[in-house]
Image (tube, rainbow, N blue to C red; front, top):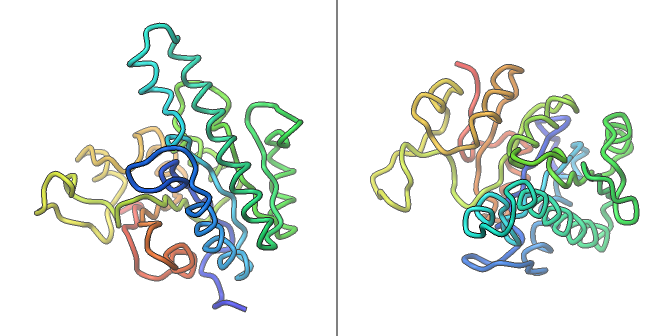
Length: 242
């Protein structure tokens, strides 16, 4: 049995880039399997885990609509939501292959491959020790998966929203553009908004701020980081009320 978890229930936001190799697209089952092993280690602690999948490794609706006038923006966003379902199904099989019980719930009804998202059913799955993978965002266009994760954190009463990304926290500027950018270990919601830091979109930040749900931003690429996050270890950047 792993070390006792610091949190009872968490929302883990996995970006689409966690499903593919760096600077590539599509799905790499090697990457998905590695993420699954990390999630398994968290599951074994007894922490209840709901995962919100991004879909940018396959298609980003906003970017797609900007480059193709033939596709209406709302259609492009729906296409992006369907991409998250593809990722969710890949993650589900990878998890169940290593003995982790899962359910995929989709905000867009598609009973042939996933349950519809129903809050009480989702809570019941979590209470029974299943990992729930939440796909298709909110089911509505023009809403990011970051905002979907914040909304699910509110609905499900999560202790924290954990955003697994390719950087190791929140910086004063883009560290890839400015090597002198400062990484914060802690920062308030208000400062994130006032400095226009690209942590999550403003709508997601507002949801978490209004309902006092802390956000942890950390690097999923370092082995063991998801477990460390759930155990309350000092990694990444914590965003919370001042």
